[in-house]
Length: 322
Image (cartoon, rainbow, N blue to C red; front, top):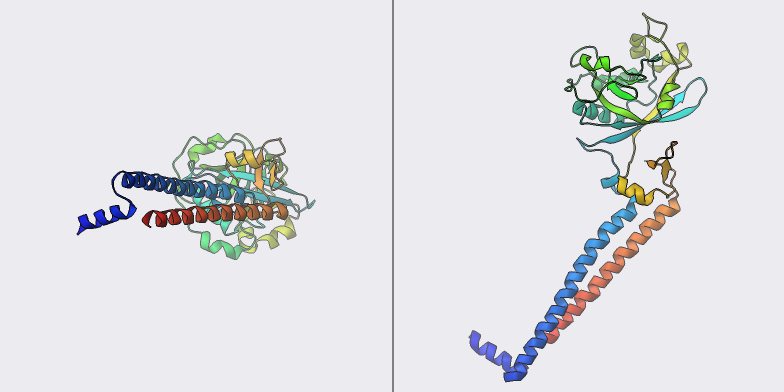
């Protein structure tokens, strides 16, 4: 049955030399259709990532936000407010899980829960460190009282600008942390493993209100009373303290994206003249909307072109079969 079909089909398109020419033409048309389809697929493959890059302008692509999966560095911004003057400043922390995996994970969870909002620097000793972390509302600390285990000591050290959790001995880290003013590398062997470093804003840390040692050894706030009464106790007895207005994960595009987008209004540059630091919430909505619009237009153009190409390919196949 198969052979008669081939012979009849051959007779329809022409036998002998004519049939051979027709087969060659058919083969050439099939090759054209194949190339169109390959070009269509490549266009889609190129256009989609291109659209994602456009979307980064609005910060919609989570893949380049730098929010940090486990094991990846991420950034946290501390917005600091001084009670006495009302002035504010930002402290940008770079959290490095490689230094302290458990500590970094704990800190990220606390920030995501907005645990540090309104928490005050209750123990600030000039030349030594600034300690913070007891919540403004004492009731919010209940779910975080289970300590985490210590992390092994790494190459990170308690030097100026490095951040570590406070402890009360082995495996007792919970939510209090401190920023080193100077070289306190002697703390390394005592289980204080840094998990972050001040990327920008150390000048803000240097201006924190100095409390001195806490009670009963000094004139500073009593940790016990803060844990009982929270900020009510602090504002009544220590009105000049510096506090964290809020702590948030910040979106940090990759170096490659920063290179291309550093002139856009959605990006702040550092005070030292460096490249991008933080994608702000005050970006120009016009820029973001235009980016999304251009992305939609590009995708529509590619899809429409592919449709025309594939439709042309199907017509070509019907012509060959006629």
